[in-house]
Image (cartoon, rainbow, N blue to C red; front, side):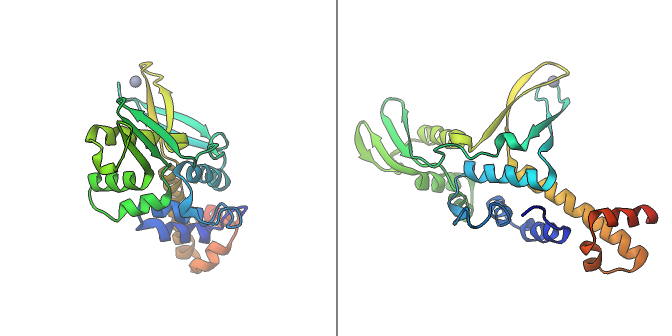
Length: 242
Ligand SMILES: [Zn+2]
């Protein structure tokens, strides 16, 4: 895929519009990476998925990503750029099991979360139930005071700590260090490539539909004919109409 056509972007946007976030991620992945490189998109870890989404974002909209954040101290709007290329490599060993030791009593072996896990969690209602499903799927072994135990044996405090570990694991959550130009306050903020890319796609799709509307109104052409034009040709007609 070098570039999606306007009609393809509209089709992807339409397919994902009524879906939840994990499914939107999978819909985007149906275009990139190529099927030959990844057999099962649902088995990708969140970190691996996001690396592919950064690549897709760069291919569709260019490497420079214009981002904004609000300063938590003074509410000033911060504008900054990210380079999609800086985040487009999957984390090394990102799908490996890892071990967490907590409060000297608890030793837990986990695997990073995948899209399949997120889909399973999405089928239950409520944050607590979702978190429980994710943990049950991610946790491979639990030892309490050296003896094998189940996830059910873990207290709330440990479950919360494991949730944090999973979120931070190998690129699963990208944290940006930001500093406010107005008040110099510094803070860390998560960046979600899936919601960023989806909002870029939605903005592009709506702009395209507006162009179709304008040209169809002015010339009576069909949506298919207008979308089949190159963006350059469409822009020239729009200049004459407006
Ligand atoms: Zn500030």
